[in-house]
Image (cartoon, rainbow, N blue to C red; front, side, top):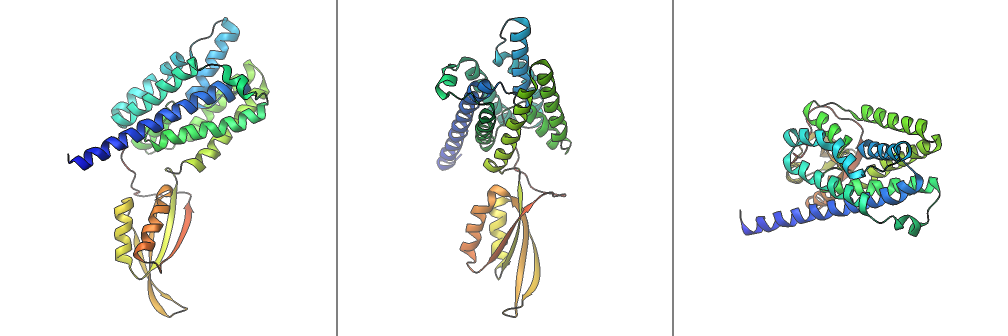
Length: 295
């Protein structure tokens, strides 16, 4: 490997590790403060681990370590994803799970008193925002926070099936059990927490979203080359006539990931400053769409 490539590889690895560790700290801090102060139940395996922990404390008189519960719940999905999805992706995700779980157990509880936040609605909203930020850092680093994310990615890439409805049903079941065992208001505030997380995550991380580009240009070949080199996506060209100037024009049609749009537009305008670009949000696509392989 050339020296320049090796240096870029180390820089990329250091960036991934930094983002994952920062995401782990924020994730644990969120669980230890906003979630704990509001007695909330997050979604996925984290919520299930907290529910088991709270049940052990209330009905068994002992507090089970969150880390042990979270590790046990994630064990099988980790093994499956390690074999099927990608080794580095799974190992980086395991780092997130291990660090965030240990910090959740050992981070000082004084942070709750420091924040002095005893309003459940504020805990749900700001806790959801912080949770989304932590998850987006992890996703940006090419990893996940584990749990149901492993399951969703496995079924999406192995069987091309969307399992989010089933995961939502599982989260609803967890909240229903929490409402039955404890109080209904905690379950309802937890719904606000999960809803805030979902909305904020779509804003912080757009790697799973797609945008459609309509580009009117006189340099279709040069612009197509830019699209392919920067995104690995193709394009389709249509011939048309600009009625104002009565000149023949070409329109390029391409669908790319939402986080690729801004740098791509800059590159296109460098090639053709007179190009006209229309960007539309894409709700659903079928057919072949390139996704970067997980390492």
